[in-house]
Length: 427
Ligand code: SF4
Image (tube, rainbow, N blue to C red):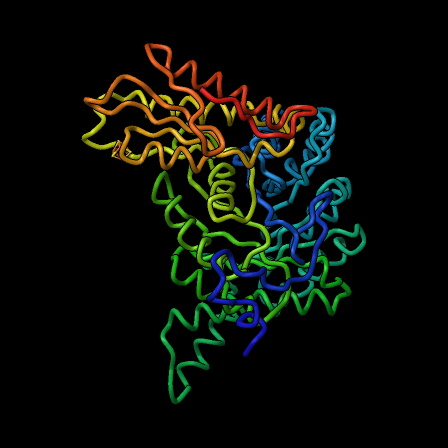
């Protein structure tokens, strides 16, 4: 039995124990070694646009991104990085910035030492670090600068920019083999080897294991699962999980959740990024929200109170419960940045908004506070349940506003200063 299999117990009702990885410090954030799974994201601004990048990093951090990656693709971008770091610090934002380097990372880091210092981690793509005889020296240059600055690196192999020399070598060996494997299997093996060989080389160059994070991103769900299972079974480096080019809208969310959910359940993954393509003009923070919701719905972490709502059916002819569920969820999410310090523990709150009597009372009783709205033909009364007991019945046109006020009261009494006991008042 290998190390990974040792960590999986199919009898567990919850997530499996985390795959044992080495712990890495990235600025003020801990990744791996049993630390809570970290949510990260990436900007899509031009990094040379200092104000625009500060604004987007701030928005991502406010949404809950615990690390933010920025592109460092040219001299103007490298020159901007320390100013971005300083601008964020002035706003009180200490979220670690990760530099994403391709092709000329070694030159930019050497020419802009303030950039090398301001970044909390460097991302290196072993397929894009250089080619032929320059590959090793350029990789070594980046590792040397990282060592000098005490910075960790992510060695991130990617299906779309895989080390072609390694892939060709493995393909040739496979073709000459008596039992050749499927081409995709060989490509997956090249992904894993690319990450592991580069990590081994970094260690030879003096980088300690606790400053190395690995990733091997693929855009196909089944390939991604296979690659990461292999990577985790063959090493104990901290692991960054992500489905690359996940896509837009529901497709990107479903594909990422399917792939990452399976791996996280198996104990694989220390930090995640959901790579969503935003709609034109869309909100970049959506990927942070999806990452948090994935971890929270799977029971790994709690970030924000969740609102359970029934899907509605022929027993509901009005949209009251949908509007109430949306309004409560939006209200909670908007208020969370302020509530974090004011109401410690509020992120564990569960609210239920249900459409009729069939499942309404039952589901509401399982929540901290829940409401069962009247379905078609039911008496126009909405029982509210608090900590499993009927608390009050709301009636009339102000049901939504009244329920929202009860939620706020509950939060204040349960999580506010000096209030530890659940609300116990009855109708
Ligand atoms: S709780 Fe009522 S309204 Fe909601 S889905 Fe179930 S039966 Fe339909």
